[in-house]
Length: 205
Length: 303
Image (tube, rainbow over all chains, first blue to last red; front, side, top):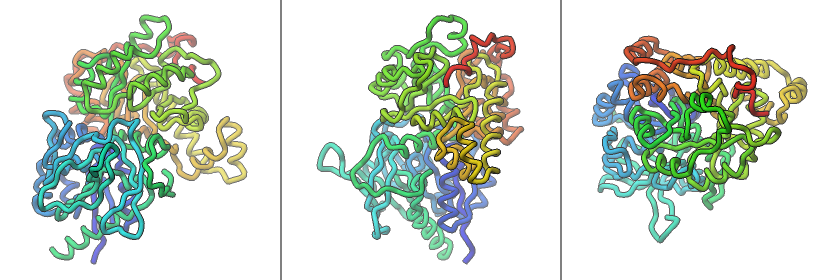
């Protein structure tokens, strides 16, 4: 099987770190800013960044529509932090006019863990990566407030202020999302997990 | 970026990774100076990745003269309440109490800035003492590494803020880039002398020589007034752009702000930059830097 080509949406954010992580997980990684570039990739990563900026630029340069079509057609997409917000069907604490790509039947709360002073790193038990916890870097991070029946919860963190836990990683079909940034840690197991999703999708097609 | 993940299970705040990582999220974006909530909303609407809350933009600080200080906490809080994007604010160089106040207000980044009147002519603030990350200005590699050694999690050029003239920012970025390129060519024996010459810690000098870039994000600041200015800074290696007086001292701030955002993302596409540059109205008037007396040059502040 040929090596999958995975784009990183390069409108804004930590694109470089994702390109490196994907390359180390044995994918061919390339930045995607234009509709033509989107057409040439098998899968896409939506990086961390500012979701309001990303959403605005995606609309302005006509990427949003084609991206929604590819998602509907089954293209695998992985979103981190702002990318998770972009994949959410519903968002809370966003701007009133903020549009998302959508695709995952979940409600995501923006900046739910707080402002930068509350940003933190912590071990996260990730279902399917059982050998050791992944190291989660949470930066003004969102969490998933509610998920639909078709969504698999891959990771949760205990809430700081009560018995509840906060959902920080989910998967629905070919879509994967994490509140945290594996691309900032040098541990590329979550990217490798996504590359396997892409390979399985391509093999089945 | 460090490649050795720590495995602490207890959440840790204020780590170098969290501070530097925050700046990584701003890459490819524009950070805009704003003086009130209304401007902050215009900036957010235009696609800014963050705003810098300050009482007077640098052009007005120049005009008004006198001592420029940290902004009123009320004004900073109003801006924090008005937008969902990160909010930065400036402290004077070496004024660690202003920085403590800014941290207590919950700003997302502190700019220890030469645009304000320095409070200490020898020392910068110890930035490791804070949970809130710091961005600092630099005119050359040695200065950048000294700031990183003090705990800065992001570096920007100094430019000559408030002039609308990009020439100094270009000089600073070229200088930093050229010095990094030079380090790349050094063997291990030469790096010790290089560190001495740069007046920077050897470990940081070695790290830069290996990475071929700073270990933190590098933005441009000072003098950006047009979409083409922003794209120029990115082509010269800036990972993003601060725009100070250039937006709200221009004829149509909302339009100019959106145009600079577009040109920053598509910095290598002249057609998009051309479209973004059309019908923007008056740019800020600007000051020629070679007519500025030495005493009015902000870039000389910081040690």
